Image 1: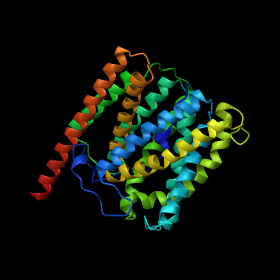
Image 2: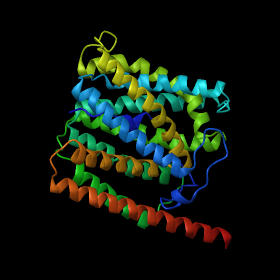
Image 3: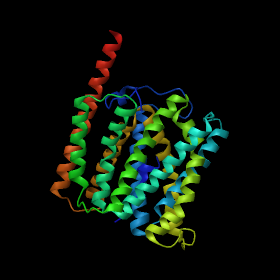
Image 4: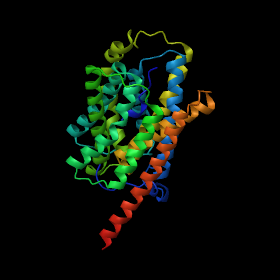
Length: 334
């Protein structure tokens, strides 16, 4: 019943509105997509990797999730080095201390998310993921002086309520699991906010930041993955008897993960951490609908109602963001 935390492989102003996503032009920088392209790539790659990972974990029985995520990042490192050598991106240096803090925090957040899933029920784990948006809003408001209008907060409330109805089944609490969840939420929020702010602070593109950070992220995940996965599921990924099917499907997930990691940094850079989390919940709804239509999962009225509420919340968030953006532009021109 364990879920892969692909969305953990992973802001200030300049947040793109949901409706504004579809009005941006292509960027002229190497290996950069327009916002609509970034969002499309993020949704398509993330939904794909969830489906393939589910097959790898549930059907083939490979449960070393953190080690698999480390492999994903390692392949991303190689792909970006090839891209740099081919002239498709121009690497830029970033202050080493900030880069290390950012990279280690990203890796640690993935570890905490996996520990949260390991110590908690699936329902409580889903609540943990839902808590990321309000926590991100709170951190940005208190530490980054970013303002969210009442209509944006209301739309996010509707969205989170819908996702909760669609996905949360039980809420079994325990002390250790609750601590792991709090650590997972805080580290995930901060790492995603830094993904946006570091691009602006150091004047780098999402691809350049990922190019610089990915080796340290892969190293962090590599160090924590073997003991963490051994603790959570037993055994070791280093001594696992890999069948041809497991190797083939794992290789597929690694290829898809390059697109996931690239689009994650790109979306957070062009939008912000809150918008990225909204997009993440859209992916969850799409995966649920895929299960209904393609896998013959039982259609439950509660799930359908939750999906409809969540989709309404996403549209409301887009409308509210667009209205806030226009109001800000009018104040600026006035």
